[in-house]
Length: 216
Image 1 (cartoon, rainbow, N blue to C red):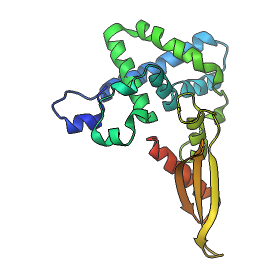
Image 2: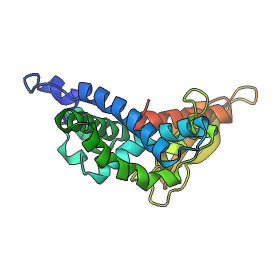
Image 3: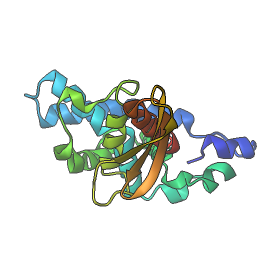
């Protein structure tokens, strides 16, 4: 449960949890594939691949961490603590992976399977199966941000509403205008972007939001 920021500030504290994250990530990839194959053996490979990716992405794993109340047990450095690290999707998903890794080393794969399959079963019916459901970061940051804030593990959007962009012309000239875009989630500002094109300004705002959420 020891984040690298805590290890950096307390070098004598022992190891951080990055190696356990690595093991947990590999195990969750395997177990999610096994779960989907056993549950839906007739599902085509493409749809199963999309489901597997969505089943163990960062927002979903963060949601599982929240259900286990792992956030309060994390050891964080002062910087992460002061910037809300206990509620960051990236940190929560990482600590869930580390717990899975530790549980596997302690008790074996079958015990981990018994733990995670109920989590998978709870969310799998709400996950999309089309290939467009996995946006590429460079090409579709707006789609990725929407997927994050609509996920079960995102606790700051109780109404499960998509992000809202408010874009205005904020300066420049007729030949070279400047647009400012602000992205809101559940009425709260999450990111800001500026560019000479409206769509690019919104993309930059989405990138800003993802960065603040610890996902870029």
